[in-house]
Length: 234
Image (tube, rainbow, N blue to C red; front, side):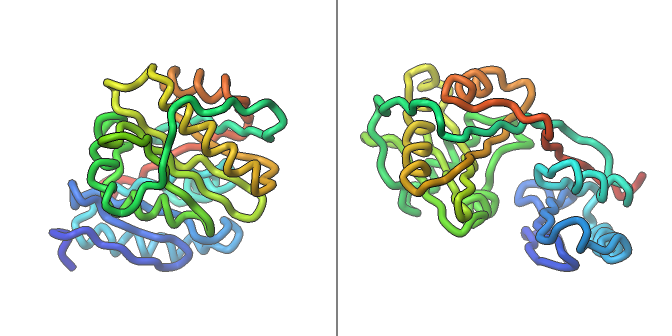
């Protein structure tokens, strides 16, 4: 099986995709709770990946119980993330920058914004963008109105649980109020649908994002997230 082109498949309770930029890296996302995953089956999947030339496998951002499962089969910490929640009990400010729905024709510009706003490891490619939009039963993608998008937000909803899946603003437009408006727009949409809690995660060193989220009513949770890594040659 060649890794010249990105691969995507689901097996043994995990979704797998290889990197579109580096065929030696793959990303793993649990699709079942950890108690329903079989260590031996996941190890088989990892061996199959190694046979295709994959040298490193990264998990998605996972919670402590999932972390314990994957650590037990040889994964190690790659990066810790902060998990924040908002119960929508505080006032949501009126967005000062108007936004609009982002059709698929905006995807190339959305990916350019994402590339400009995040370090290489965290950048979306087209597959990752599609996965983020489809990660919840209901989702919406918003960008600023105007000649061209300068920021975007992906908001998801599963029942009465909300998720701010992605927020990015071009560095040249950061500090303009666009990020705050996109967050406010997302929170208002979720509030209208009677969501009781909204979750968002961010890198521990992303102080600007942390300050924004906390100013919008988010508080840090004790059960943070982490991305783990498995090395084929270790």
